[in-house]
Structure formats: C-alpha cells, structure tokens
Image 1 (cartoon, one colour):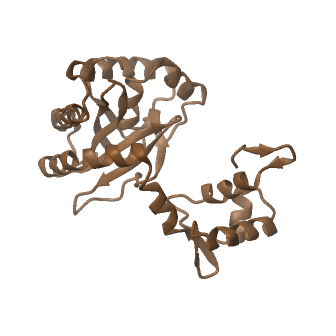
Image 2 (cartoon, rainbow, N blue to C red):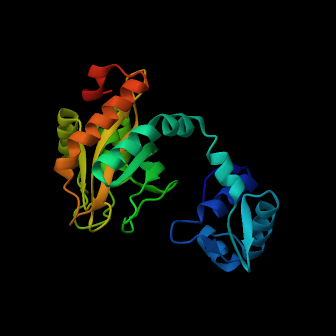
Image 3 (spheres, rainbow, N blue to C red):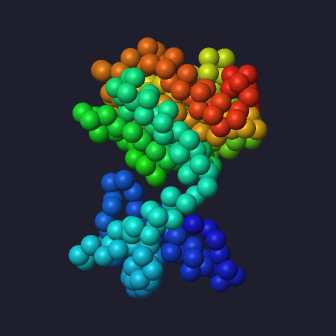
Length: 259
C-alpha cells in the first residue's frame, strides 16, 4: 500500500491508490475479498473504495469482480512525457519492426523500474512478460540497463540499494557485475537482455535522449531466444534510437556518452 498519510494513518487517497495498485498483468479482475487481502484493508473498506472508484470510472464492474476502468487509460494517454515521446517514437518503431520482423518496445524509467509506454508486436509473436503500462525491474531488462547506463549515479545507486531482485537464473543480482555491464553499455551504446527478465526472452536495446542530452527512455527489439539474434539486430536498434534522439533535438555526440 502507498505511504501517503494523514496524522491518523493512510489517507483515503493512499487507500484508493492501494486498490488500483492491486491489479497486475495476471490479475485484471479482482473480487472484494482478494482486493482486501492484497491491500491489507478491511473488507468493508475495500468494498466502499471499490464502489467509489467504479462511480468515478477508475474501476468498472465485471460481474461480481472489478477491473481497471477506461477513464484511467484515458488519463494515462495525457501524461506529457509519455505522450510526447510515444508520438515521436512511433514512426521509428514501425520502421524497426518492419526491418527486423520483431517486437519493438519503448520504455521510460520511473523510480527503479521501467514502464512500457508502447509495444509494437509482430503478428506471430509469442507471449512476452511486457505489456503497455506494465513495469519490470530496470536491472533485469535491456531497456532498463540502457537507461541506467546513462543515468546519474544516484539513480543507479537507488536501484542497487533497493536490491537487485532475481527474475531468472540469468538476472544480474550483484552490484559489481551490474556496474561493469553499465560501463560496457556506455561504450557500445547498446544493451542486452539475455533471458534476464524472463526465461526464453532476449532483446537488444539502446537509449533515447532528449534535447538537453539527458536520457529519456529506451528502445528495444525483443523476441524468443531461439529466434532472435540480438547481436545481429543491435545496429538497427541503435540506429533507430540515435535517429529518434536527433528527432527529439539531442546533440548527436551526447548519444554515446554519459548523460
């Protein structure tokens, strides 16, 4: 549950946020009992909050359960950073998907996690752990490491201090190896996910920069390990990210150095 509080404990807003946060990629619909369990709220409180959220359109009724409402999606599309970056990136993502015949992801860093703001999938794509609006630990993804490599030291420290959680047997979970990998990414301008976020899933990713030279997000080509040659795809990904960065006004030479 989120930590915003009044003097007497978690505020109504914090409790409502906890209800919304209870949903995930594998839990799109929840009953009141499960909502109460996931949020730590009393069942009566969860029921009351869910009812209020349904009335304002943030949740919608699905039989005896509730799910996230369309109004949340509409609000999400208005987030300036997401909208501007997504709109600029879409043509490059479409070209990259066409050139590589692979899934293309665009993500930004929020705290210590990456949030996927757009995903273009190929027609015969197999299931992937990512989804638009979904989050994954930055250290366990190609886009996340591409962003971390060019982020200020305090951002990387926050990720390490929070714990490098293991998602698969290949996830980098020690600070030393992660720092060395980030240094390699800064030299090459490309990062890889070698089955670190999910078994069988690989990607090549590159950072995207804004007009002030700071890293804005990451662009990647993703697919199944048995089908995607990430090193062969790397030049196309890096070229797309560099071209997008130039479109956004980034100084060309800053795209291959620390932001």
